[in-house]
Image (cartoon, rainbow, N blue to C red; front, top):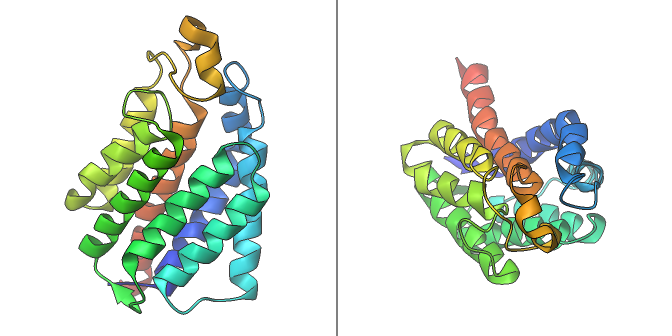
Length: 205
């Protein structure tokens, strides 16, 4: 079962991954975006970890709602609203239970991804974060590790795609040949999910 502590560990691990990969995310964003994706997410997830350290929410939903609000208020461009919507949409679908099963979390994360798709109007193959998130939720039935692998493959598969959403779409065919930074950061978020579960297993073994 997943409780608020697990969700806090997930987001704290995600913040560490974003910190480690911030320069790479910005490098990916340079040729097809505003060259600020890494810096923006670093600022947002730093705010998330500070808020969670100050106020430890009691339920998974409360953790995700608090984190989503922090990302919306601190991350510039489209990324803040999209990641905030992902977390808040997932939290809303979880309800107010103190613990949820992995299957319940998987269903809620799918609801969060669908909320992102509605907000951004993005579909699979548009070269966005959806190209990592949707394969991940499709793979969640096989476990968090399978979701991590699927998200990473989804991010890598954006390289040959032509962007149809966001700033990169203005480049047309010149967006081809670059890995989407949003899909890459989304894959980090899913990787943090699997890492958090493995950390929990290590601590109980």
